[in-house]
Image 1 (cartoon, rainbow, N blue to C red):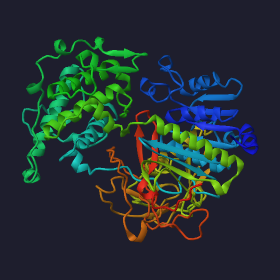
Image 2 (tube, rainbow, N blue to C red):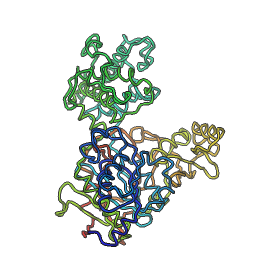
Image 3 (cartoon, helix red, strand yellow):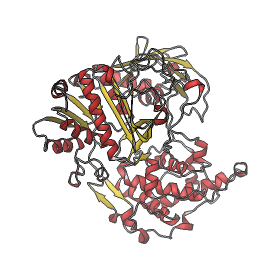
Image 4 (cartoon, rainbow, N blue to C red):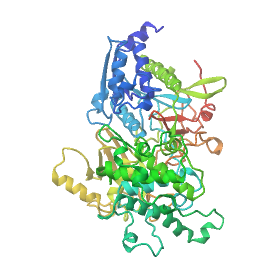
Length: 625
């Protein structure tokens, strides 16, 4: 039973929930049953069939509707006298600014991506509102408390870089199925359906003299008189046949490797696919073409079935047809999305054909989707446990019981006879550029990099700023906003295409930049260091950002890594220095020596969850209440 003090704190509290998915459904229910009477929910997603086996506020009749609104209605049925307000919107929308956050006593996160988590963290810091973070992956989970000036913020420790693979391995010598998946979605899918002007190793030309001069000029360009089947076969033969033959011409590469087998469409497909595949009118289409699938037209029903080479080739060709027949307006702007059924089918088929060529075991659509989307299947019980822990910490926050705050970890296997392991929060990291305003260092070739590179790859991608403003001394080089006139917009757009050293206020070695996001009320300093050369494999972006760091491993040992080895895309992340100041718990005067390890994975119900390595957690000082 809650004490009188607890009941008073709960009833008078105004709470903001961000996210109404796996954790969010359990959290809203638990808040309502715990006596909270003023709850606001923000979620931009709609309900999908795959959500129903773990998000128990939803039913099949709710598919396609707003998660936030349906969750609100479901809880009001058994708690009709409390106030729940839902927002079917993106938390990054302008209306959810610092003033909006200031009206709440505590913010509770159940978000689905790192970018939004960082955004909420910054708004909470600017509004001086406590934040309770959470995450689950499978049987693992965690809840952390973040109070401005008292505990570390969500960004005090750098998030680990996603697992990356050398580009040469992806494009030339794949040995694992994940290499084929990355090739299919980040190279082939992007080349066919994204920006066709991008340059990648798929542009390797065949030495086959039979190739037409037109094809050798640009194999990915579809001519006006070329029907979709001809185009599909041309692409198929180029990427699975001609490019493989071109790779085989380098004998040195295959001295100690298994030689791949070129595959051509004529060897695996019938002469005409019209009769074989049927019409595109037979494809699965609902909600105005929002769901398009190859499987019905090919009679494929089980996503866990393993397709052979011929089936994968048919899926490849049919998916290509459907993109041009049903989604032609999107071509040129698409990026891979694991929730896009047709995209998943195309990538699965392409990855399997490539795997067949290189002698790599094939995978089912279900398995390929898990690899491409970095999916770890969710456990409803873990979500419920974490939701309960969030409410416990929220009550402590409302009572201002700082000494009782805990970061609590839900473990898969008992450690010290515990499945729930609480530890004391850490102090703010003095090297954090978000809450401690420590300058960052950017190594970049100022003569070869444009301002656009800095904005897109650093300010937006790595620093997570939505509406950036960049100043060099007193010169305003770039800003975004609805209040800009046409002349200002033209000037800033012109600056984007200029090299850093050629800007009106040149950015050179030793320059200091101020970067701000007015929506987040965040400002940070970036010190520029000119660097001529970068390793194309290890530093493909041609720039390295460092400055905010996490603590080193104990006694010089490397920190242990998570047992979850979930393959993910070829991506690059900012390089934080490994010489960080050490983390300190609130009750300690000596620094902790343990490095915080985290793994970003994605659950089946579409929540990206961050879970610390429980093996490292078990080494930390524990205080059990």
